Amino acid sequence: MIVRNTRLTRSRRGDSSERSLISPLELRRFSGKLGYWLVFALLLLLTLTTIFPLYWMFSGALKSTTEMFRMPPTIVPEQANWSNYPLAWSRMRYNLYFSNTLFLALGAWLLQLFVSATAAFSLSKLRPAFGNVILLLFLSTLMVPPAAYIIPQYLTVVHVPLLNVSLLDTWWAIWLPGAVSAFNIFILKSFFDDIPLDLTDAARIDGANAWQLFVRIVLPLSRPVLAVVSIFSVIGAWKDFFWPFLVLTNVDLQPIMVALYRLNNRAEEPLNLIVAALAIASVPPLVLFLIFQRQIIRGITLTGLKG
Image (cartoon, rainbow, N blue to C red):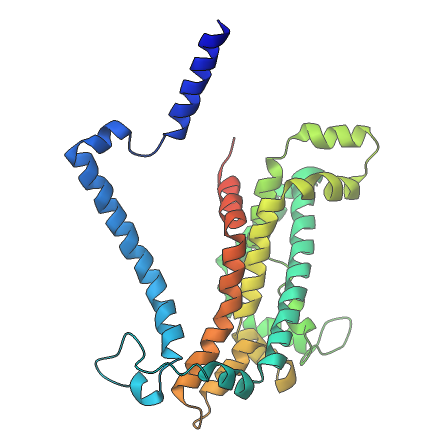
């Protein structure tokens, strides 16, 4: 009996390890093989359409200015000028603008994560009165185009009500308006709703208060979705251009995207150095995604599943 159960267990493990979208029996047929390779070719083509622009940017930075304007264009640089990257780094003052962007992204990430997580926890686990109405009001802000509230937001930053101070040329002008994100609150609340109430009820019986529930129970179980929100926050702050361009007139405080815009407007800057500067600026978001891609996919999957 034990041997039979062991064989049954092994057979089930073998079946589960061989599960796929197309069964091995279908792959033995000509129609199954044809469909498999057609799907593989389609996915490979779609992958190339996303990789080729990156290759074109990084390889274009190695070309000379005359080679970049040559028609038909060259796929591989005739002579790789690797000095374009350090030259663009020095001409762009990347040490300053990279540190500015990192500091802006760090502050935006901390504020968004704190505000969004606490708001989602309050709506999900503390169950306030009219919580659904509050959530609906949060979601209704997603229906408003960002361009519609640029002017009132700018006037608020110029003269903050009650405080009577101006936040122009300060990083608080970027951190505070972006601290509340209805999209992040919705994602976090959806994830917090799936955390069993038995865990929080047991913690309450043991004498835990709301903050202890949030820090010791909810946050440790929400690492996948917190990774997703973190990536969205950091990449959003990294690529933001228009709002920092409006509120940061001091050149020494501007992030890298605004600095690239000023570099592009210089008539004396060659095109290959501009492309090299764009390639350098795109490296941190790409590295960040490659490092946390598993957490991003897992968080999106867990957030989208119910039950």
